[in-house]
Image (cartoon, rainbow, N blue to C red; front, side):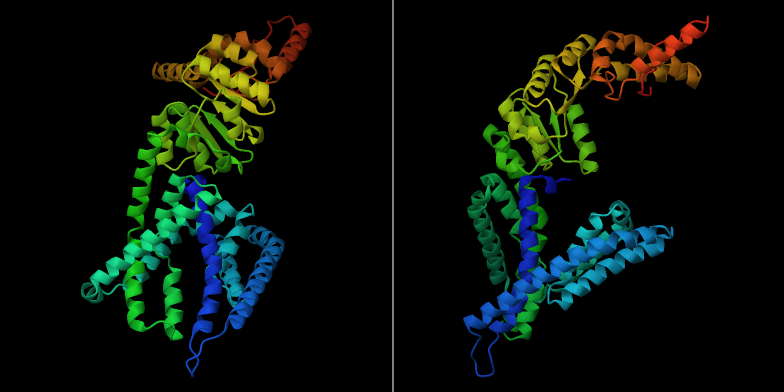
Amino acid sequence: ISMSSSFHGRAIFSVLLLQDLAVVVLLMLIPLLAPSPDGATGGMAKIAQALGTAAVKAVVCIFAIIAGGRLLIQPLYKKISSMANAEIFAATTLLVVLGTSFLTSLAGLSLALGAFLAGLLIAETEYALQVESDIAPYKGLLLGLFFMSVGMEISGQLFLAKWKEVIAGIVVLIAGKLAVMAAIGPMFGLSKLASLRAGLLLAPGGEFAFVAFGVAVGHNVLPANTTAILYLVVALSMALTPYLAALGGKLGQLLEKNDTKALQPKMEETKELQDHVIIMGYGRSGQLIAQLLSENLIPFVAIDVQTDRVATGRAQDLPVYFGDAGSPAVLHLLGAERAACAIIAMDTPGANYRAVYAMNKHFPQVKTYVRAHDLNHAVNLEKAGATAVVPETLEPSLQLAAAVLSTLEFQRDEVSRIVDDFRRQNILALEQLTQGKGTSIGYGYTSPISAQKTDASSTTSGSSGAGSGPAVSPMPA
């Protein structure tokens, strides 16, 4: 998940996107650099004119595709989905991608840019998940074809003959791009470590190099012999990408673990977060919640006071930070004022209470869901302002008890009744608190207690039978 959710991952994506746009300009510049029959090259005025033309084409084409696509894509998919035919649905996706790529190629832009714009348009529809499921089998196949085409550019004989030049080229390429990223990354708000990790992942050559070199050879800008060596340099550097990524992860884990300042949240890393979830406590519960949120593409940040837990999350490229969840300044750095809710699952009752109190005092609009040590702790958390509280021993114990009762051959309905009765007995101490808040302790749903008490009173007044008991908790056993 989550390279894209990390700060250096977002920086890498931004650079790659700009690279995709820049290749359009590069492909237009290469013919201008070609020598004329008399040996002269194009002047600066001609190059500037071509750049202006490329910029106008790119802007007009992108805005036209996005505007037209938003008007056409949603109705098109709605019509196709009504046919309930998986083949037609998949063919429609292929038509949208190829059609958008064809339009960008007509404007002199890259086919890859067209496919990217098609992805953006489809992602805005309610059918995005279905499209993602349909194209999943083709992702591995197309990725394999791409790397196969890269491997076909590698000449073993040429490498043996020119291995010194090839290795020198790889070193210069990786070291140069790494140095550039390390130098300019901090200028754009990246930490030194994030700049280094981004530089390691961006250091290898890209697939557009093969396209650019091919065009350059066709226009006699580069000699064929030099281009063959450059192909080797780019292809072999791309083969090093997994190892460079692993090196960056190891460096990040090593350096961040020994530098708590680097683990602390920074405003530039969280300023873009909106309607996210804050996880306070990255222990077993926090890690499971983070995994669930990640799998469902829900933005979140996590915080903990144990550096080994933070380092574990950082090693997985997750937004996990070191800090005190009870500090208003730290919560502000996590974007608490813009958060959708906060989940508090720290190890000690005192830490949970401080976090709830800080959130309720400084960010009262944010809902807080808390794991309580026991019922007495749960009462204190409710008084401190928690939206909903889950006693950590209640539900696991009830689930174990339900399993035991099932093993003892109790009927399913009887097991549910026994467990629900016991649950009600254990949350009676919190009913009055939760009625005022409109929540049910442990679950956060709208409390049915008041309504059912009213119904029970009506039933009692209208009959001589015994009144019904308290409401059954909405949480299944």
